[in-house]
Length: 320
Ligand SMILES: Nc1nc2c(ncn2[C@@H]2O[C@H](COP(=O)(O)OP(=O)(O)OP(=O)(O)O)[C@@H](O)[C@H]2O)c(=O)[nH]1
Ligand SMILES: [Mg+2]
Image (cartoon, rainbow, N blue to C red; front, side):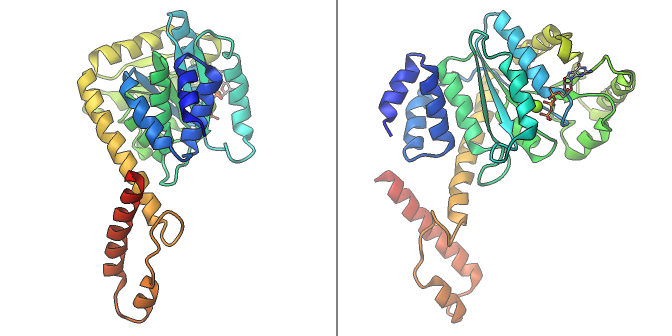
């Protein structure tokens, strides 16, 4: 792997080099950490917007329209579509790809899909790196579309500065979101598909749930009404995002939270490598199991012992 050439080409704006670099980092090809370390000083911590919501609520349509709107405002946009089926045959995503492809000619818009599952579950740990790569590449705003409601959504809030929750009529949405704990986390609520008959009911539900008394949040987070298919309400959404970036937690607070999560996420990934014992990645602790079976140790002591020894060995290997 000639990382140097790839980095040079990427620095001079080559999209194919950017894509290849992302692939290698996503695959955790040998040397990826060193490349990220070299790239890190160039990360500017541009606004990252997480777009989440119930399947079919219109996230992809909205993401595409938002990218178009931002591009129209002279911004270069990076889109990461977290794709649950990237290792399967990807039925659902095919539709997304087509919708997103409508954007591919747009100046400055770069789209990347990636699998949703990392070794530790949740949003793929490489998603955080891909955000950084796009940032260092010069993107002004990064949009991350996630799928489903659950842990991924909880995780995306750790990767995104602004979280947008997309709702649509007739999905029993309120209850689902509340259960998943996602409702409380969003900074901006989108009521999409306002052209549908049940839209008024959805809006009332949303307003009810976001009442200051209910959520305890002041000020009441904005609800933006959209018809993503027709591009209606998209400018208002872009404005709401810009406003949130300007008036939400300070850039310094965001950087601190983000840096903390970077370290925690990398530590979790390392620990997951170790936890794969006795598989690959962990030290083979000779005879450990024999000692255990023969009653010379117990699983409680052995787990700590292996963890300590494996960690030392792993870090020594990476330092050398
Ligand atoms: N009526 C109506 N339909 C819409 C609107 N926006 C999107 N849709 C349709 O809703 C369907 C789902 O849209 P997507 O953008 O794929 O939704 P998604 O949330 O990305 O779906 P998944 O990624 O599969 O979870 C598509 O058929 C869209 O054309 C809207 O404003 N009004
Ligand atoms: Mg989608």
